[in-house]
Image 1 (cartoon, rainbow, N blue to C red):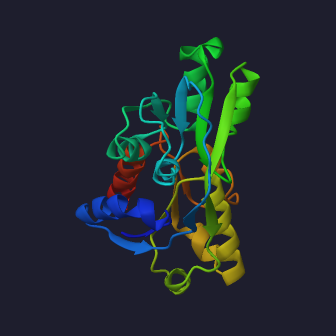
Image 2: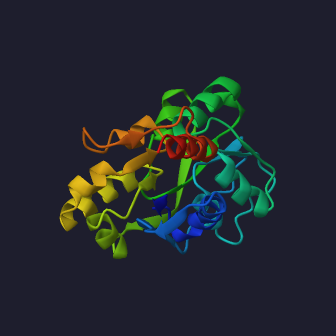
Length: 235
């Protein structure tokens, strides 16, 4: 299959390699560009844990962050890999933002110290709000901005010619951007006919009714690739 990969360039390399190893052709169409913020100051507090919902939260940390001694909780394999590569003792819990919030509520004590949440300017799931509602003190450190793409580039022409078989969408925001760009390009019908592989039901819900939406049983990349393999066997 020819598959459009919509992840930011910083995140897309391993996925591209895995898909190509499985025999697919990959078209890169990054819908977000990651721009780390300068001058971010992280309070020096006795953090009970540090929550990370994106690998970019690790990559965008200021050099003198002073966080190496704290417990790091990530949502999945990619953010876990980034945290460990940066020298953190990290663990993956929950699979997505809501799952991580549920894990923290059930496993940690609001009285044992504050939670630091490393995030971008725009987030899904409102981890900070969920933890505060459960009685935790949660400080959100905004480390980066994710600027949306303004066009589909060559992917527009491939869609128009029916030469894209599938697209992979990892967040509600990227799904919104994808939908807006295909509408602006006048290729909504073509985009609705390709297989839209969505990380979760929240991602799929952003796309129009009637589009071909494929959602794995669990919100992780391995489950998405297994679903992709099943779809390939079905033709």
